Image (tube, rainbow, N blue to C red; front, side, top):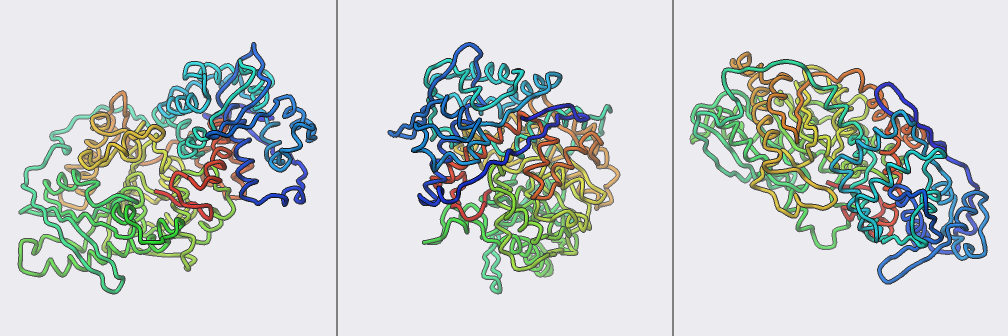
Length: 617
């Protein structure tokens, strides 16, 4: 039985794992891959329904699982007997290979929401954009249902006295036979990751707790274009020792001042991702170098080498080579700065501010001194079940093949780090971020399903030394800060992972222009003039109803329980994480865990990486 009770400012619950004896002899009768396929097929449909359907006045008798032209039908009464006693009826004996202890646990577990907070938890999650997309997707996966019915059913089911269970929900469904489209259910796996739903539950708390009551006025607007004319040039640098070709876009003006700004793109992107920001900074006299990393850019991802294995979608070496790309860039630009030409004296490589997005955010922090903890990362990736992980969790795990135990890529020329929606997670362990030797600025979006805010930004931000700044975009997604002119509609219009872009997030990009300029200008004689734009009042002055904005230098004490969850070691995640996370959010994630089994069994995870080890964008 799952029990939910108030815990300070957030829900708390506990989910004990029933222990059911296993029978290895039975499981050896069929190939393991087939067992996984059948287990996932049954469990994914059953648990998916527990997350989506409830009705008190009708009773279903059968569960039919549809996969293309194939169907399997199971009597619900037989499943109830199996969940209660572990015994298989004659009708279920043909399914003995797939009715494992894990399946029995899933059928027997119940979720009980405290009536004092249950409705609030349900309403906040279902009203969120991600909750609406999930309901719409479930409506497709469960033929005959619609969004309104699903939303009402979940709310009603959460109020049941004896708790929410898979079989009770199946019984309550108002049809004799419940049919589930397993293919559609599997497609939900890329969206419903555990960390993401933590962030969804946390979003209204962040909006409230990070707000600071303060008026804001300023003598000028740092988000409008600066007075200087911007010039642009593309260089192609060749590092013969490492066999890497590095395209670089340079932006500068006639009267440059301040540090050199280096832009590092994310996995599967390119050097134009923040082109609008590069032009903006250059218009205020900053020289900007937007580098492209050949082992993780768009071109490399689109055209892998012939015969490339799927688990090498991202090489572990990229976690070392990316920071080295930047160090090599600084070496080359230092030489160029001494040569006759338009760029002579305009490349201050002795002071570099590195700004990166996603995997580029990791790159910036590594150059600022954050130390890779390969041992701790390897433990997390090998001990934690790869179900319910976010894409960034999968991506970080590609670094476990690095031979070193700890890796320092610090470049003393890097004097500031700006990390936008960074991939951090467990890469630096509990101590690695404390070694950062520069001021830092972190940006997070609460609807980022690729690098969820809690585990990849908030918890790491708490570990960073001062001075540091946190920009929070309530409702912002992973690509919200990117240049709208450089996006494909296929990316921004995904049905399951919606990206908020264009006019909807214009205020966020406006804030980023002003805040990043003010942050970098702290290294110049103009520091005091720009200091007002590093305040909560400035960020909140640009808020909209769709995207409220916050800027803080520390996290409120009310978030401490969430930070504790994010810091749990791998072996505790399955048993203790439930104590401090929204019960309904976790229940949705439980769905994702079994649903992903289906996807993985078909070899079609969100990033198509195969089954050996996680990895993603």
